[in-house]
Image (cartoon, rainbow, N blue to C red; front, side, top):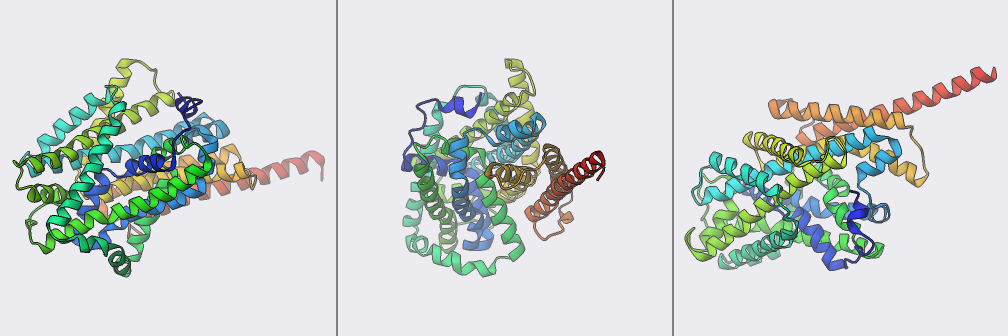
Length: 441
């Protein structure tokens, strides 16, 4: 089913605030919250760079807001219609692959939350994996508003924690503190984090599916601006909570970075058996289940949209099991949440951006690349990015540009861009030579 069919003839009715809220909810999840806190535990306010970059990504999305609203269809469908079914399948599969990392993050985040109340990590990962798989088979899309409400309730819980710990003043001056910390961030690492994050937001299906529901283009544009402001403000909240908790000396020395936010909420609430703490943990664990099963459902739907396998219940269950086991395998490798997210972001970007840029140039009438050059670009970008991703996961010392994300993008985008230009130029030269031969000139 296409996206145009999903929104229907009367589906374009979202106003600025409603659409901005949906755009924010697409990225304000456990990866955003616990990942930023994990970074801030060691880096301070500068650990908010990933979260701030998501907000800035919505300003990049402004450039494409009108295009998405007018075209409606997902990127892989647009490219497939122009360059062939193999391109549609290739881009769709790379998008599916990037969701494995997001699914793994939900497993890691959920187990970290449960660890605060004493549940061992490995068993909780196994149980969460099973629950994700089961829930993904149920028609629970209508519960998404409830899951988003719990995450926004968690925002108020964090603000309340800041108030209890007398840290609201730190939150109010956090924007200036963040700007002052930028020179301390390693330039290469900073470019890798911010560039991959901002470009991903502009190419992210999670945002595109909401933009097409705006009542008009003006609404889509202003919603992106409002979402950017909201997310940048939220980006500094987890780090502020960490800094305040560190100053109050309430964080145990051996606490894992992923567990800090749920620990702070439980401490402020008077312990894990206090009603406030139970509610706070609830507002985190339930969205982990919802987001994890939702991502798994999107992955399964992508397979059927690409017509890779026949649509029947047995295949749906089998695909879900394979997807969630792949996510579990990635989650078991451990590591930082933000680093894991960005590895998969960078891999998808490396494969999809150059073919998408070729499509945009064709769409604008600036230049038309041949279908063969785009197909080869996607193939080379995908293979090189995936190979680099696996190499970095297996041998972290293989990073050659000082940044995991930058290494993947430099290799993947370089191969994709080079293949596109060389193939297109070669075909045009061959065409000219053929014409000269036929005309005898």
